[in-house]
Amino acid sequence: MDMISIEEAYEIVLANLPPRRVERVEFQSVLNRVLAEELCASMDIPPFNRAAVDGFALRAADVKAGPVDLELVGEVRAGSGASATIAPGQVMAITTGAPVPSGADALQMLEHARSSPDGRRVTILQPVMPGQNIVPQGAEAAVGDTVLEAGRVLGPAEIAVLATFGCTQAAVWRRPRVALLVTGDELVEVQETPRRGQIRNSNAYSLTAQLRCLGIEPEYLGIAWDNPADLRRKVEEGLDRDAMVISGGASVGPYDFIKTVFKELEIKILFTRVAVRPGKPAVFGRKGDVLVFGLPGNPVSSLVSFENFVRPALGRLCGFTRPDLTRIEGELSSTIRQVPGRTAFLPAIASPDGKSWKVSPLPWKGSGDIIGFSRANALVIFPGERNLMASGERAEALLLPDYFMRSR
Image 1 (cartoon, one colour):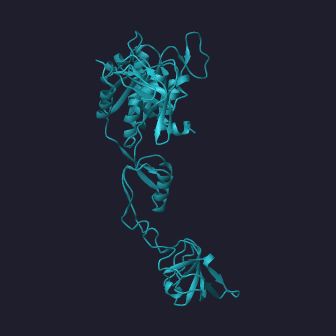
Image 2 (spheres, rainbow, N blue to C red):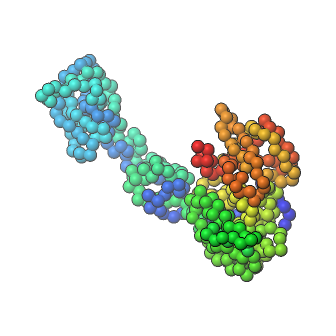
Image 3 (cartoon, rainbow, N blue to C red):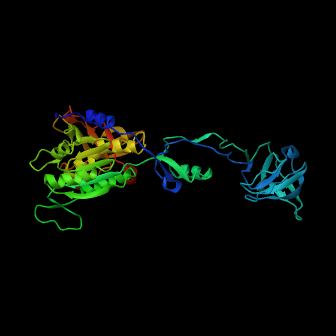
């Protein structure tokens, strides 16, 4: 297959997404999930005229000119459940959140009233307007109102709304099950000591963290060795999920078997090379509704390819409208160069600069330099047709998913 632009590859990925699925989840477990169905109010909120302050319930007409002495006839507390009524010339003590007694149309705060020594009368020191300090029934939501729209990301406030209406479960878009596989005879696991020519497997753990940023817990299938039989067995196992992410084996070396195994397993290959730096040997395929991503093995290439292709796809299956990395524009703090021909995504520090941004490219040593890359909070985008971007020039950048935590 010919090498295609990143824009073409992105459109191919999005054009091949399978339908999303809905599931019902216990409401305390829906944090950062996406609501699949709107929620309508099943009751008025508040369900009664509610006291907004601690004070005294009264008739506004009784205190037009003040100070005025009124008869204290009782108290209404939040949660008491008792009904109460006041007549002209009377007041009733009330606490925040309590139902306003029948006959009262205003509340005066405690600091604007004075109780008599015997506790039988209250002097209201200032007048009040009808409705003052009262939250009317249904003011926040009336029966039938839409209180949460479909597509809303559920955070702490939305969970409180679910609880308010007694929704013990919520309909959300199902997160895809994702298999994760890394390849290469040179890899050993983190707890092992590499021999000469070996390296520890880091891609499985960076990709796991990237998937967790989307709320997805991958199912790790381990390391596949550089032989077609082992790779085929593990890829076939991964096809039982909704998507599979494979790191390594996607290039053109004599031991890169991904494309061969894909063909044997009848995975339709939709692209194999993208004009992007780092990450050119990125493979994308589909078998039925299962999406398969073959990412390069170099650590930075793997990380950048995930953000360019895997995040937009799996994020949408999770229900996010725009899961792509946030794109900003800012002023370059230094000149950068490249050999033209591929769009480059280079590590940078992006920082607010008044009403704009400052984008500072970082030194690094290529697609294997994850240590240098780890200092970045953004990716500056270097257009493929250019060979130089000058200091002071405007440039686009992508904020990494943990940008705000990395920028404290």
